[in-house]
Length: 232
Image (cartoon, rainbow, N blue to C red; front, side, top):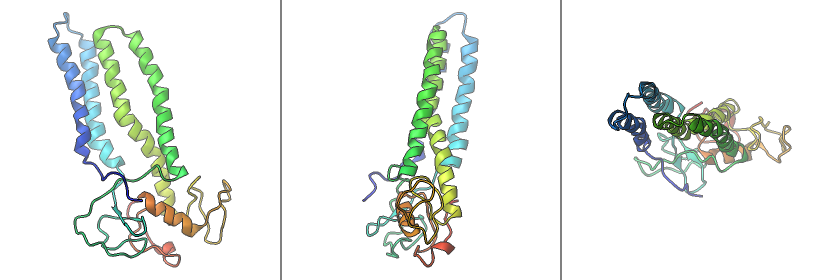
């Protein structure tokens, strides 16, 4: 199935950097006297945190987009000229790249659920702070914290889970359970950890379709054990 959306430029998210600056401008020009220096200082630190998250953390935590094969649904690294799933030659030198699809498998869906659970748990204390600091400046600080968690906290929490999956795929050449990420031996027909009917070849095909496992060369039952992923 063709991926729904191509990969977006990271710059599309950077408008959020203006949010703490806008709040700072409001506090400085709204005519509040005396100036709420504590809130101004906190907002300044939050702006620095936004910048660090956007330009330092996000690039380090970004999983690379990949080519999509219309014949076998496998994903391949951008620099590959042939599909690593079926060997089909890519005709375009400037391919359309697609982000990973974490909604395809049970194991990857857990990353989204984990991130949502973390966000829900953190939203409660944020709104308690909203009532604890009824001053105008205090509420602006609380909303800035909330937006930081919505944009960056969610991505960080999701990346923590996906990174573990990528490491398992790298260490076991894609032969891991699509439900619990337990290693699957070449002769196994069922995951010994969760009981899912699974074998190594099917698991590799499923992981290739997500974009999380990007081997450099054609993946076949004979060569899978020697293929190496592009991004551990």
